[in-house]
Length: 244
Image (cartoon, rainbow, N blue to C red; front, side, top):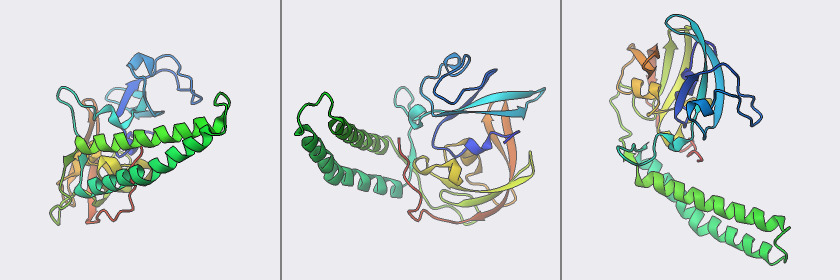
């Protein structure tokens, strides 16, 4: 979408964009300039957009970092904003993985090992990989719960809150879109699920129908939206808890 970076606002990944002169090839190789020149080694996608800056039109590389890029703990570490319902669903997944998936994975490894020579035993290594993936998922969920900042799900009837669906007019290209404000663990921009910790999510919270809101992507780029309507939708359990 030329002229806008907004569709990345709800993705469950931290977003950054950098000046670039060459395209990412998309086949696993990284051409000069990005991501090495930007100091990026762990990323999900790079996409390219042209938009008008203050003085000229530029092409930017929009980089989706893994979800823990902004949430790693340390000096002044940040926390994921989650609801009590998010925590409940994550604990249920942890319990299922510990009581059911872990048992199945261990049994699969045991059966594969019993086949003999492990040097060329594909089933054994596949079973080990699934076992390790399950343990990694458990650790990931436990870490997210441990470092979570619990936020309320209720909000004033006439204001944008968590789990609400908002119809917006984007002034820069006069398009209208609907998005749902959700927590980071349920964010998915491809499905219109925008994180409360994204630029547009942060900007909209607490505003009312008719408000003209400035969304600051960073210090040099932002855009205006007008809130056309607010639906007080809730978390009905249909939004999936994201993967790593």
